[in-house]
Amino acid sequence: MITEENKNEEEIQDTEQVGEEQNEATESTDKVDVEATSEEKIQQEKDKYLRLFAEFENYKKRTSKERIELFKTANQELMTVLLPILDDFDRGLQEIKKVKDKNLLKGMELINEKLKNTLKQKGLTIAEVKKGDTFDAEIHEAITQIPAPSPKLKGKIIDVIENGYKLGDKIIRFPKVIIGQ
Image (cartoon, rainbow, N blue to C red; front, side):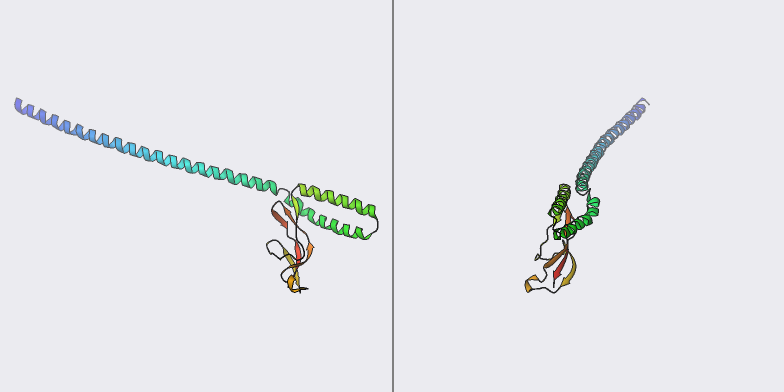
């Protein structure tokens, strides 16, 4: 019986050793799996961080651009309201030029220049349009078409009815023109 007991004990020990070896193999596999999943998680977090950082940089650029654009056109509403007054002032000057009072004309011209210079400092400029320029629907507003006085003036600007104005690079009022047909 001693021998049978020894055999049973040996079998139990062998079974325990096999079990321990399997546990060790499972543990090492688990360690490898844990390390692999940890690496994947780290990589995912890095990717997430880089995307978030890129998105934030794009946001900063976009808001900076919007802020610059806002500063450029901050006075647009005020300038738009003043444009008819500028037109009236120019028409008034044309009528004053018909009168022979030089002092009145000189005073009004000084006021007109001061007003225009002040608005120019704020970014308002006249959109230059001349008779004979080619009509461009992107930057001109055609009021009407008349028969061209000469073949050279077909599709060209014959007369400027109302000046156009720009605020910075943006046209806030298109010049109103008559074109030849």
